[in-house]
Length: 300
Image 1 (cartoon, rainbow, N blue to C red):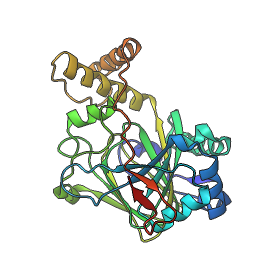
Image 2 (spheres, rainbow, N blue to C red; image 1 turned 30 degrees about the vertical axis):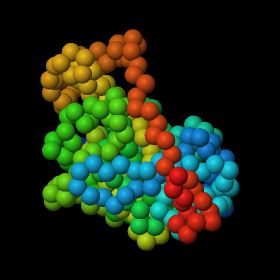
Image 3 (cartoon, rainbow, N blue to C red; image 1 turned 60 degrees about the vertical axis):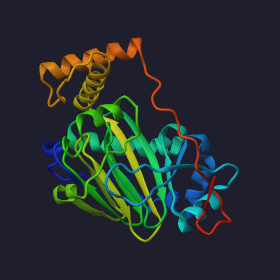
C-alpha cells in the first residue's frame, strides 16, 4: 500500500487542504467478500449505524440504529439499497490487519509532513448511495481515504461564523456529537473536492465539513490522529470549555502555540486527572437494519 503525498506537504500541512493519491483501493479486503468478512469480525456493539436527513439550515442530527443478529453479507446488501451510514470506529484497534493499514498510512504521512504522529486511529466508513453527512467538525486531525464510489466534500474555514467557539468546546468536552449549525451562506466560502477511488485528503484541525455521496455505495477510511501542536490545541479548547462553564470566564479560542495556549493545555491535563466528564449519553436506537425492508431499515 503506497501513498503519494505532494512535495509541498511539509510546508502546507495543517494550514490548508492537501490532496494525495494511494493504491489501497486495489486491496481485495475492500471488495464485497472482504467487506462482508469485515462486518462479521468487527464488534457490532462498537459500530456506529446512522441514517442522515437531508442537509438543511440549522443543526441536523442523524438517527441512530442497530444491527443485531444480521450477517455481514446481509448488512452490506442493506447498505447498498438503503439510506445507511456505517462507521466502524477504531477498526485498527479491534482488527490487527486494519492496524497494519493504519501503521503504514501514518508512517508515510509522517515522512511526508515531517511531523511525529500521535494517537493514530483508522475507522472504516461504508455508506449507501446518495447519503449525505451533516455539517460537522472533528477535534483530531483527519485523513479521509476514498476506496470505493465517489463523494463530494465541502470544506469550510476554521473559526466563527462557520464554527462558533462554544460549539467547538462542546464537542471537545463530549457534551454533543460533532454536528454544527449550518447556513447555506457558508457554501460561498467552501473548498469543494470530488473524491474518487485512489484519492485522499487531509485538512486543518477543527475545519467544518460536510459530505455528499454519489449514486453508488461508498467505502472510505476515516483516519484520525494528532500531532503535538494539534494535541496542545485540543487540550486548550478543552480547558477553555471548562473555564467557561465552571468559572464563568469568556476565554478566547486558542490560535497558535503562544504562552496562553500552552498554559491552558497544561491546565487541561490536570483537569482531566481530577475530573473526566462522562460526556453525552448514547442516544437510544431509532431504527434497526432489516434486510427484508425495501429501504434496508425498519423504524422502531
